[in-house]
Image (spheres, rainbow, N blue to C red):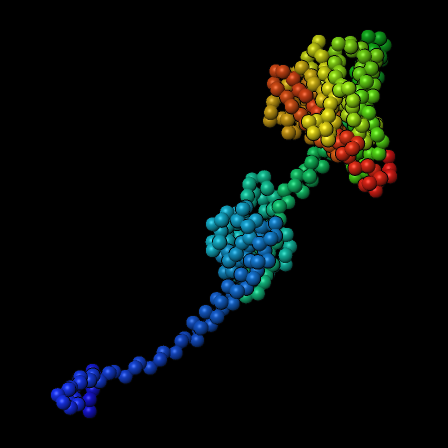
Amino acid sequence: MSQPGQQFIVYIGTGAIALFTVLRDPPAPTLPDPASLERQRQQILHQGRTESYQDIINPITDPILLVRNARVAAANPAAAKVLGDHILGEDVRIAIRHPAAADRLANPDAKHTGAPILLVGVGSADQRWELRIHALQDGLKLVQLSDRSSHYAAEKMRTDFVANASHELRTPLAAIKGFLETLEDPKAGKDDATRTRFLKIMYDEADRMQRLIEDLMSLSRIEAEKFELPSEKINLRDLVEEARDFYINSRGKKEKEIQVAFPADIPLIYGDRAQLAQVVNNLLSNAFKYGKKGTPVRINVAPNRTATMLKLSISDEGDGIAPEHIPRLSERFYRVDKGRSKSIGGTGLGLAIVKHISERHGGRMEIASEVGKGTTVSVLLPVVNNAPSPRESGNTTS
């Protein structure tokens, strides 16, 4: 009997021969390992689910991660922007480097309710994020990051506002109380010069409190009315001339100290007359406070280059403001020079009021300054032809 691999020759006639080789039997087929098949099936299922989730999470603006076995299985573009393009396939504890998130994300037995977890410093040191984890199928976790920085900044602003307002009121109250206690002394009360001096200080402090309270009430009213479009047609020339006359006739300013420039024709604006008068007066007051003595304050009113906005600019020739302070000048109670501002009677709310009024009118405030040369504050307001009328906006209040 022939064996596999054995060769033999067969004569097939007329001298022809053929060489045959006995081949080995084909090997029996090997059956795949059931565990391996199951792993492959699960991998295909996981990949399919991940890809389907990827299509869902891509358009979401919040950073979204899909995590499996403590590794990032998928991420949307927003997550890649915040955490980096390298996070795919990375250990989630490295992708999100925060101790409050590490244990929850890496622990396979952790229960996830979707409750927010505050993270500080992810992305940048001053950012605040809320982390939410949701359990999906097959051990997959959906991780959502929501940027709450603006919310916390607003909360801090409100807290600071209350603290600053309390401080600004407490200081003059303490001064008034102290001088009253001094005047209770019979010796001090009988000294006419001392009594006169103390009473003047008390009057000035009370006046300072009154201005602060009025400014706080103005801000409150402006914020309450910020969604109401002003309805009255206003000629800004009239308001500027009224303010100029007030400073000349009641504040002792000379005509050469207030230089005004108007175009031949000034377009009308929709506005709240009282609030716009407050804008002009606040800007003039600041210009006189911070301008150098003997230098003029300049008021210019003119349409912008596209004639869609009317621009009111008030300039002084003071010490100017360093660039790093300019973005914060409209914050409530923010002062470049706190000592000087208080000595000249500033409440720290003037530019905040101007900004809010400008925005309520559909406009904006701009500040330009050069150290050693002076500052110009401008307010741009939409002219009547370009501003929506109150009737068009559905607003009938004035």
